[in-house]
Length: 585
Image (cartoon, rainbow, N blue to C red; front, side, top):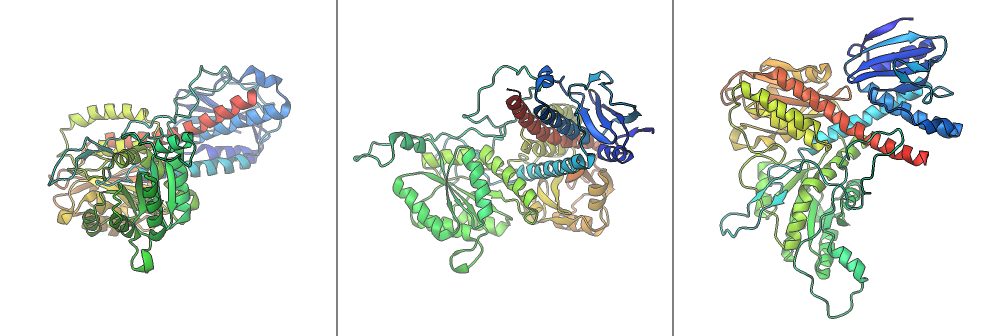
């Protein structure tokens, strides 16, 4: 039996299935970046697997009881196959052998070979589910990067007295969130077979309240002094949402980030809870859903009712309002009510529980890392939330001018590629994609791909009728089940460049955002885990110039997809390391 080829033409999962059906004994050698990987088969069953980065097996494996040893070897095989299944490039060759080899290439597999093999069908099912989970998390991270529109408050400057203009605030996106304060200290590198990787930064540092000291009460407090001190140092969030599952997921993540959460499911209970917090003298941030029923069913803008009723109680906490969409009239009404901070809730995946939970988790992480710390500090200081001056978005910065000369983007790309290799926060990767897009386009929109649709997340550049493209993009949804350039790029995973297409949905997009002087357009896929999870649209409506240098931008977007894969692979490796260290003790 001879089986050789290229992974671009035949994915690894298909290769494993072919060898399994033939029930052959031998090994599959795989050429990958940085070295060689391999999978060993006994009569079609997988008994060992490794990658170019697999460390040598710990000699203690040979002294463990059989059941425990098999468990550790199985974990190594699972993780190696996860890495191999994600390869997009490389060559492979299957070699028949009479017996299971002890050495494959330069890799000794004796200690990491199972006595009894694993049915590849079981492995393929686990791998497919793992890829689906990672794809869901990658798409969630892309969407969470655009959770906050231009009104979102991330970090406030010192308040400046001003009778006509609101306080000035600026947006600051940290390179990576700090570790939790209760995380174990970094120790020396372990002496077993596991690999040390950088910390993933999946937790955030609890925010400490800053403000004047609390005066001592005249009577003894009801709570113990330790509990009171801890409560004073913990920012409080009043979380209001009529959907129980949304509240539960957000509350869990907010609590893990160091916030004290009190919940309410409607405007009435939110008002009562806020009154209790005022009685206790507890400053708080109001995080409320806009689109919930108001009292008596008068409207579905219950978030506005919550804010209005709190203001009547002379309570003016910083407000973070969650919304599924935001138009100019809603934004104007919010400003009139003093609401300046909005975030876009993920909604496109409600019918897919796995994707929806991943979306909410990424959304919560974005808030705890970039938005809530600044609002919590303002709550402690007794300052309401304030709008930003100027245009742009927290995710993509101020609107850029015309693209620079052709020589500039390539130097710029080198710097951005270095940044792309650094972040361990998946949310930052989409931010970098949009930063790079500014060097090639005068206008761009990033779409997230979910459930056979592409939905606009945000963008920059010209928009008609004095609209903001970043908000207008959220109203654009393109089905990927109908013939269009969007369908071709999403399913073919190849970039498209040329005159504005005449298909229905390309025409629909241009009609919504305005043609202006635009003649040529580009559409690029962001691919992660072998599927398109986002689409980047770009054109030049101000000058009408044809987009140039798209090949370089395409390379960067491809690397962005790989970076997303690596973030989630590192998380799994960290979990594997912790489990293996515990088992080898």
